[in-house]
Amino acid sequence: MKTTKNDGFATRAIHAGEEPDFRDGATGDVVVPIHLSTTFARKKVSEPTGGYEYTRSLNPTRKALETKLAALEHAQYGLAFSSGLAAETTVLLSLLNPGDHIVAFDDLYGGTKRLINHVFSKYEYKVSYVDASDVSLVEKAIQPNTKLVWIESTSNPLLKLCYIQSVAEITRRNSLILVVDNTFLSPVFQKPLNIGADIVVHSSTKYIGGHSDVLGGAVLTSNATYYERLQYHQNAVGAVLSPFDSYLTLRGIKTLEVRLERHEKNALRIATYLSNHPKVKKVIYPGLASHPQHELAKRQSTGFGGVLSFEIAGEIREAEIFLEKLHLFALAESLGGVESLIEIPSVMTHASVAPEVRAETGITDTLIRISVGIEDVEDLIADLKQAIE
Image 1: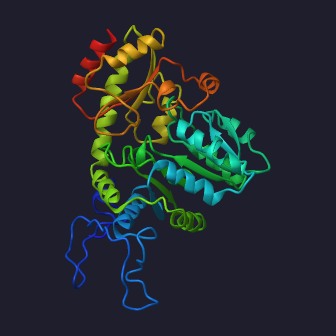
Image 2: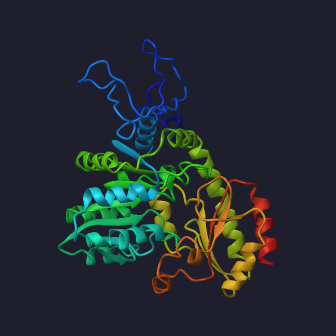
Image 3: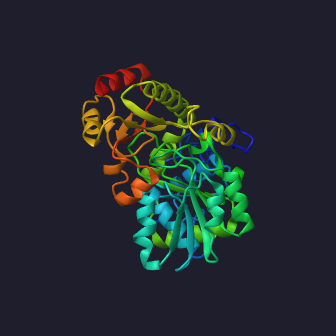
């Protein structure tokens, strides 16, 4: 029952990392057990049992998850963390030195910007934010001390794309590390390592977990040198995913592909509805032909995802009234769960971004982001209709 790289996505999502153990004394579990032990006994002083010593360093349930995540992203190595930001912190700590320069997408998740700009400010990292949808701006921003380029597979919340393969050619030419946050598309719709990325990061809280009940993050790579540094800091810093949260994430992954298919189907219907509504100024969704990078989205990925943004007519008060009249959409941060969520980035997920920076990147006070769930889409549209009218 051991999976191979030639197996289909759903097969790997269900079986990778969870092959039953038929060795003497094993029980043949179809689902990997939750190993809650924090330490592991050994018979011989010099031989940890099965390589396990202490749960922070390595845990069987977390190892199963890391194996599964690597299989899904076509990576050689996977690491699971206590949150997406913990994963990002480990990447920055492991691969950069004080004074190094980063080129980053201008429309990054607000928490990532806060991490780079403020938490790591003591290390004097330099950062240039550019509209990476124009690949030439990435190359122009490179400086002698640039070490890393950080982009998102679909940016948050303006859903901009960049041509990852072209960015990868630039980073290879300049001996830089390319990091891609693949949270929005997940490995169902895009595998950045296949098109030149060196490292993929995820907030596994989102689509990978999929049920709004587990916090987590992940880092995937096929570069052995980067992996050794990342694994060292994973253990040394200790922001690892717990065994129980690893189990919940493993369970969520098994339905990842079928969930994403429904998320995308519903998102396209809702994006089409909103784009034809007179009280909506514009809709941003890569699955619409009106999206400026629609053709790139079709060429670079196998799907468009379940997140869309739109601007409602009026001022912020009209946006607030609309949101507060909804019944099925939860007014909440986060995304990727089976239930539909809705929010105003300027006062919620991106409130930590300076107002002038939000204005410069196009995050207006009436921009609304929807994480479309897997409910009956007609019910979701009816809810939007009554609230917007």
